[in-house]
Length: 491
Image 1: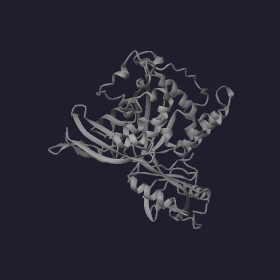
Image 2: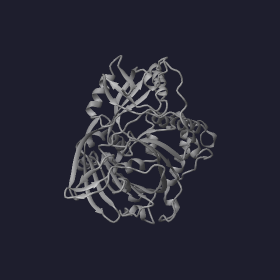
Image 3: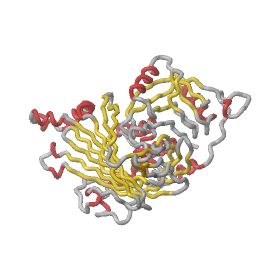
Image 4: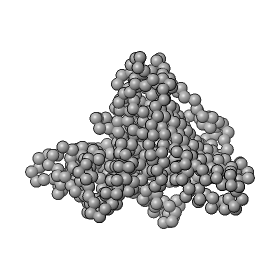
């Protein structure tokens, strides 16, 4: 078995608290997510990005560009219990039949094919929460090793230079393996947005708003989320929900000033001639997200999703579009025009394919085999009294900091153990495979993950439903000299 990294992502902020449907005077009950196990579902996915930098260019044709992609991805829920699910995604860069326009207008497919080759796999196995939000990823060691091999050989046999940035990417993946999920199957998070482990009754047309603070490079940015049940279809047994999210403009603008300054330095001559109003406009930034979801009233699963995210900063605008539909169900949401246009103004990219000899699902085949039995270690007492004989372990912390979560607006506490404690932690997790454990900070339980494989590296990320302010307090406590955490089996 390859190592499984211990991660927990916030879902409460992004997912409606959604079990059998029932209509009543109080509204409509949307069931909790209860997917069938062992059943493969196919999804048609269309994506596009629009980049507009016309503010900085005299010729609009050189500034506004669109890239798009179309894919057919497959997902199977392998198992499900009271703590979460194990899910396999089978991935493909092939263009589905019947797509609008010429194949060469789908440049994302060419880039995605190279991504699958670089990561060395066409499938991922994830551990998710009961909403379907990714928490853990299997096979990280193999993927990182494959990427290092690719970098060492390089295209044409020329090794990648240290300053090329490839090794920075690999380091980031090692620090946060769920970036692999975001790169290869972001659909998992979008589908989870409309799913919840428990049922909730909603009224058509009634909006429900919540707010939270998110960290952007040290700047706290308030984000407002508004959920609305738009309609239901009794024949199709579906409910259509909408979600809008908007970051506070002033705080978000503040968080983007370093990036805006870098952008302006690239257009130094034009920036010198900006009027006061233009300069003020360039220094403003905004971010908003609009999502529509069609949810099954039979099992609470997301059948269709359409998302638009818009970021404006520094006189530029980036807008991303994503549409997902399950192929065995009829589609009902309108497609943005950019996804159906036959002619697009696309960037003139020359994308050379990477060698793909090892790309394929085989790299993760061993993940379906049972874990090796625990080896003897100092965390198991000599009486061999089964799992409960595994002793608690005190671990020294090398560093702790609050960082932005990858697949949501949220924050997470990133903990790195000392080398000695990393070894103890690996021994503990090897002995505790299959068991539910606890992480304690100052004698308080902060997460309760189930150990699925041994965890090397001494890297732990804590999130869940933790308050960002609480995460900051924990980070400050763990940054003190001699700070420790305790891991143990759940009593």
